[in-house]
Image 1: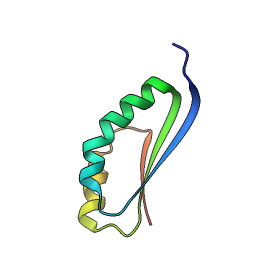
Image 2: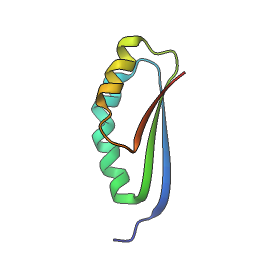
Image 3: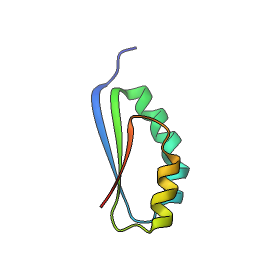
Amino acid sequence: MKYKIKELSLVVPTKDDHLKIEKNLNSVITFLNDFAQDFQILIISNGSSKKSTIFIDNLISFDYIEHIKI
């Protein structure tokens, strides 16, 4: 398969949007698998509650997803 994009970094800024991230993460991963040869997803929590950051941490089960808390 010829990919349209060789490498892609997707940055997802969030503040307590953990339920929206959970709802959409699988669709985003499916899209990126189809269109990018190599990709990473960076979820950036900026001022999110502890509940939200723990929830997102528990969603991450792939090496190509990183959760950064600022």
